Image (cartoon, rainbow over all chains, first blue to last red; front, side, top):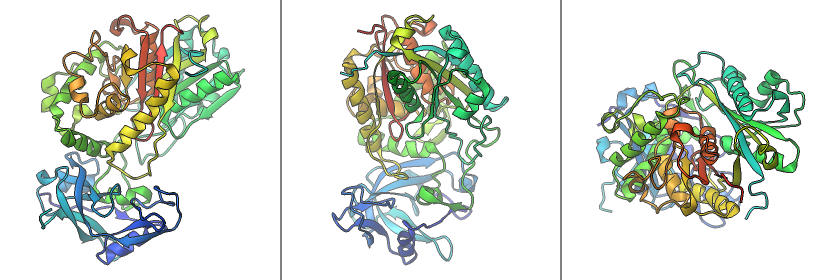
Length: 144
Length: 394
């Protein structure tokens, strides 16, 4: 299993589009930007709905359950701060509630060899400091 | 079909001496390549009246210093002091293929007569990627905290999806790496011109970002390449046989910045760009005699072959087997060695090889009886462009 204890992650800097995402994560809630006109969820946040061009967008909670859409196993310490965790799984998750909205994460609490396309995962929350909590994923405990 | 089909041609091409990292300023590489391209055309520098480039610095986190880490149009203007310069542009969105297309448009509009396009690529000494500091801003706030540092990972995630959805085996990619290197061994300007690569080298090489091993990634280098474009009637009077442009296209599929790992984005991008190229040129994939497809990372060739219509989705790794991509195969592919052999110079070298093959000037690696020469320059995920060059302008 990758050793994340010695990894110093870059701290996300929220901006006017992304702040509600990070505020929700701090409360242990995964919330994505949703179009109030057509109901489309999207991530990363954007100025307009990428489905219907409406501009009335709000952040709404999602269940945090989904599947691994794609992944890579990092063996190269291109970013030295992640060297202690190598090899580690960086995954892209597609949520059940938000098809097409792809979230980057790490696969935590499991060997990196468990990362496979289609594997069921669920969100967990990893505090980085007093302000920022990262949504992360682990293998889903329930049957799919 | 395109009303301007075969009305513009590539004439001369030029290369700088490619080195592993910066030894001389990048501007000197660009100047060397441009001078060589103009000389290859048999033109005088004073004949050049159009300039275009795409000056992006892919080595992220380094300062943009004109002449050192990028070579802008302004820098080239200052070096050349062209007495008859009448048009110039520096493009942003579609990589170097976009600069070539702008030059084509300028020639068709009659605002210049002989345009030079160059691509100069910097490899700083020391660390290639100077990754973000303690904080991640903008789109990287959703990726950098998870260890998505460089472009390789973004490409690698789409590749795992492709491999597992189509139940494919990454070891088949050895054929691409090894065949391209054999082609590159016939390209005197390639960084790996004298370095062979075996199937065993590929299969035993260290993993970088699974499924990419070392030989799935092009090597960062310092170098530049350039081409001269002119109208077809002028090109016929110049020294080299012209490569006529039958059609081009650009990626027109929509994508939000920062959305990574989307395989469908590559496929939609490639389809949108190639559809226009097929329509404008009047050709289909079956008509193509030789193809250059961008290979900054090996999997880009797979997405290209499928989205441009050369084979079905999920079949590209089988398509390239059994000698098909050899110089005498059914679809000779990346005949100059690709970026995997030349080093990371982006898509202009693919365009140059496409033109050289169409005009019968590819030397030891010339494919026999080429008329239709296809180029997919840049990975179609964000910046794809496609071109078809022909030997006979019918």
